Image 1: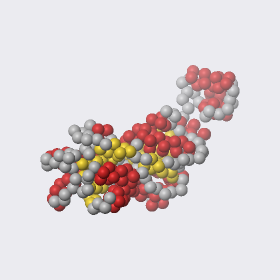
Image 2: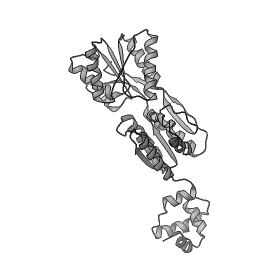
Image 3: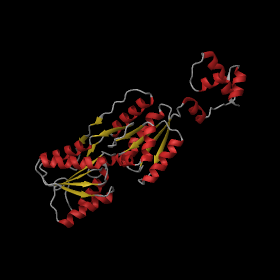
Image 4: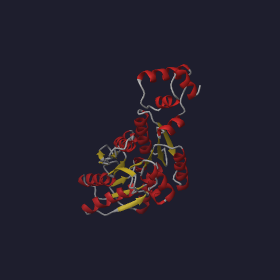
Length: 324
């Protein structure tokens, strides 16, 4: 059965059938007749054709460099649920970090004529220096969930990461910690904001600044502990920019017989579920991924519906547990 056959059997014009399929204005009786014919013949309108007719594909893409990263996965889940409930098809893209791969995936989304694109995380800040990628994300409604992108037409909803780490240092100082190490696990604008929060808080309290590089893994936290041991550095607190290496550090410290938190306090960031289910529950900064997802989704919806866009800055919260 084609659209022509439906029109003939329902006794209406082809344009009337098209209006019914695409949600246009028709009388209730006309809609009833057209739907009855479609149901009788099991007709399913082609999504691509419907999208071309309405200039909306009802498709959203969520793009991230590594779907295994906890806060990306949680944010993606919330976004997917939001748009699924509004009858959008949601595509999940796991691009990897190579710029050519990111560009290729975005070109694929452009060819599919998606209605909007979410970029998860500040790792995407660097794509604004690629003219080809800029052309794509400036021509399709794009929202970056946490980052520091400065492109016309691209909206960024961000968490105040610097404030989150500042609160950690201030709390530790207030509880007698004066030799506080910071471990930076990635090189993104979000990570840089966290380092800045650490440096500013340490300066306010007139404390010495120690920043070490750290892999984004359990092994990364372990390696920082071993590095500090080989350097013979005295410290009473370790601050991490993510929960995963912080958990690795706790395990490594315990293996060395270090008491937590009486000898060394440890903190993480993102407040993942794993922070609550370690043997020593981890103090962590809650970056409120659910709020980040909600605000990002509302921002995208406003763009799609041509309404004014409000872009808030999300305030993190320090969650105190056994590790401090």
